[in-house]
Image (tube, rainbow, N blue to C red; front, side):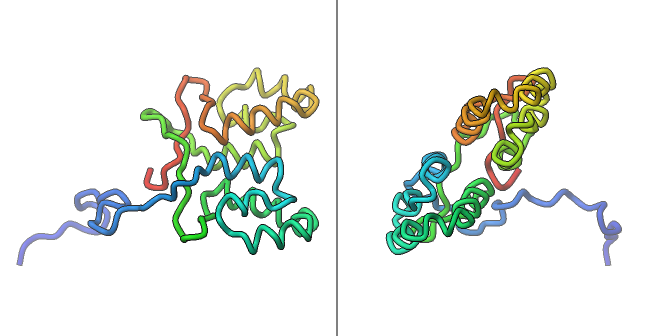
Length: 170
């Protein structure tokens, strides 16, 4: 019998996805595009049509996004990368910056629900911009919309100039 260290003191476990399992096969559809369609036209079901889910798109269209509730749920699902296309594949995430430390999903959720209070900018470490955004109620709503689109497309950086992390393994 050989010596075995107590639990927690062994070699580090491999990262998620490196166990030799099947690689993640992404859809040819973009998560950023689906999110933007859902953000602006989700109550019409345009996001579901884009994902190839025609039946759900029609149902969402005739119910006006489930009276808005379904549209909000779809925004959250897209923000958390939990929505798939009609073939059951995950949507292509925005590019992840090599030095990224912030989870883009969390910043995107903050932009949706508390962007007018500057919470997304506070999460990004941009305190001054967060305060200005708070005082102006998200730039009278316009700044909130612009930031949400920038975050969803992966075109925003934190206070150190790093982009956001979108992959599930980090």
